[in-house]
Amino acid sequence: MNDAIVLDNFDLFFYLSYIKIEYFCVSLTIRTMQTTMKLYTVLFITFLLFPTLLKSQVSEEAQRLYNEGKYSQAKVLLEKDVEDNPSNTALQYLLGMTALRTGDVETAETSLSFAKKKRMNEATRYLGRLYAMQYKFDEAEKEFTAYQRAMRRNKEALAELEKEREYADRLQRLVSRTEDIQIIDSVVVRKDDFLNAYNLSSSGGSLEWTRDFFENYSGEDGVVYMNERKTKVYFSRYATDQGATLYSMEKLIDNFGNEKMLPSPITDNSEQAYPFFLSDGLTIYFASKGHESIGGYDLYASRYNLNSNTYLTPNQMNMPFNSPFNDYMMVIDEQKGVGWFASDRYQPEDKVCVYTFIPNQDVRLVQSEDVDTLAHRAKISKISDTWKPEMDYSTFLDRATTATQDKKVDSNDFVFIINDDLTYHQLSDFKSFSARELFLRAEEAKKELENIRVELNEKRKQYIESSSDNNSSLTMDVLKLEKRESELYDQWKTVKIMARNEEIKHMNVLK
Image 1 (tube, one colour):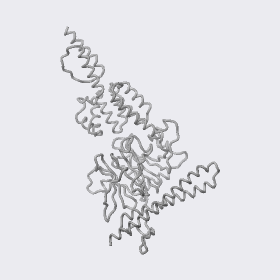
Image 2 (tube, one colour):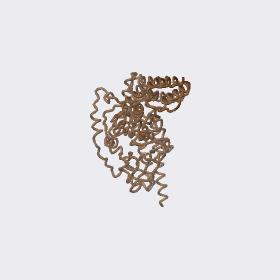
Image 3 (cartoon, helix red, strand yellow):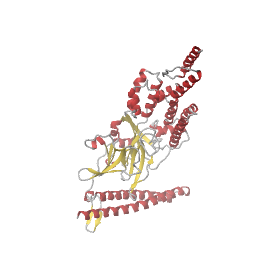
Image 4 (spheres, one colour):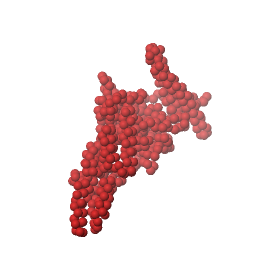
């Protein structure tokens, strides 16, 4: 009787082996059919739900690198392992996961699809995420539905699935708000040398590698932005638990100092890097892995509020500027009328694509109901899809690739009365660095005020000459410009007084 039971159990073992649980070793004495069935059930569920436990076929070094988040290094080892053993499900799954996390979508899809066919359910979930990251939302939902069906009794797995669906829904909403920008050029370059693709005019400031700006710099490399006047620099460095944070330093006598961390809400509990300021000295673009980023670094814009001495809540930029991959180093050259940003979407691990575009004065969205059109524009499948009919972009391309000469500064740049006995004409006349910075902000507000007034006069002229059908729209434009004109005028007057008072205060201290 006992022999018959043992024979039946081994028959059952070989019968269950078709499930593709590729390896495990069971050493025990089987007493009854009931206890054996319980054992197989436990083992089946364990290996089905926790494929990453299959470590005996994954090298310890690859598994360690993966667990530490060093996906690029782990991927190199796993690619060799899979080449030697392509039918190994555990290796294929882990390779697919590293490829997913490093942006290699082709390898990720191949390996995860293989693991999915071998009944590895987690591969199905991550395959759904991969499709969502490529804006293939119908395909993503098919994978999520299959995963939900397989894991219907696992509450934790279903909770994770809900997060995946929320992420896919968020991506879909962002795709529907893709910005209509004209991308006139793109170039793929090495990540460690991508600044050479930026040809910023002197009026926009300058970009420099952290390793070149700071002597004896030993941290992780980044980018330093210096303003046009060479009085201030912005950069990122690792100084907190969450990683890099943005800082500023001011020009003192012969070097930079007075280091300050950029305040909240720029700084949050995640990494910030790649800063750039417009010529107004108030508008900042930067990259962040926080602020509800949709993946890696996202691009954000904020503006310095002179009244509260802080920054406004950062605005996440639209697609195609952002993607589920790393997007960073937004630069806008107002003198040339062109901009650049970098992205590693769909690029090899050591490469990045730098896009050259024409900045919009106002945000304009792609007007289309076709989901495929929106997805292609969001992904930047072809830059020619962004071009306007019969538009000649050669002038913009020439500007983007041509170096500009530094502007010469007259000996008397301005007239700024400090008191009855003292009038300044050059920035070097200021004794207080803070007063000088306030004065420059006042001048920037004045410049913007002048531009607003020109635009306001043009709108008023259009209103007079237009038909009654267009009057309502022009009225709104005029009202907005008038409001902005009033704000800038008050800002200009207030900051100019602040600069004068700060300089007088500083001179009194020196007496």
